Length: 293
Image (cartoon, rainbow, N blue to C red; front, side):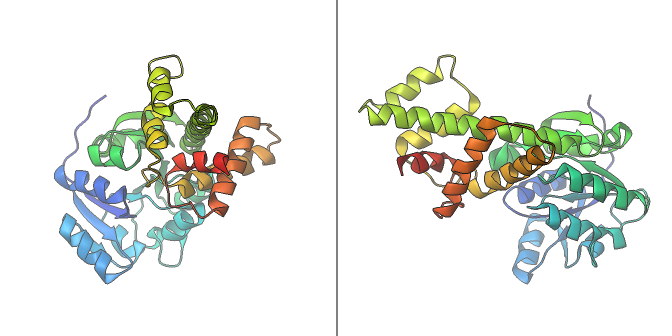
């Protein structure tokens, strides 16, 4: 469903590799963006985009009807929303906080409850598609929270992504994102193992990839990661540390509820080895290097 929204004032917290592209799309649609920044050079970068910089989340949230966050960890989100200088101290009742971070569903529910006590709404809206999807405005957005709040911000989200799916109540969007990560990274590990299997038998991995890509093993992840592994190009498209962080969340929740997920657990162990080897800022295709020892 497509809806319209008159230009509005929003706040954005997290002008990283993805966030800066998302802000650019919001500005291009005619919205005013108040951006939280930590450093003077970040303030200049925000101004260059066309956003107005502020040095606390509370200041950025004042006068904004919607506050977007896109930071790294559960505690980062808790701090920028509920901390001493957090959004909760600047946002007016009725403001909607839209969190694009990938964090714990449990923490998401806690944050939503704390915001609700101050009359502030919350939606967890983690995304899939990476930096390329953010740049193109084609992200997949998984939403947890009240459906009526989603409809209020849908026109904004439509500037950022092409597929917007309401999953359920608070935290459900984060559960869906972790499901996405489990399927995605287990797939990357499978691709790495296939490439290792071929190379160990002196078979051309490029030709193996070409054959796999058009067969039943074909997938978006194979299309993305297969050429990287064949070319041994491990420059970050998706930083492995982010997948390791997400897998840590999924692993901890699975252990807490007594859920046995052997493929996820095995892949998680490979990610931990990758991190121990110092490849966290390289691409997750580096799982191939882990197999090579």
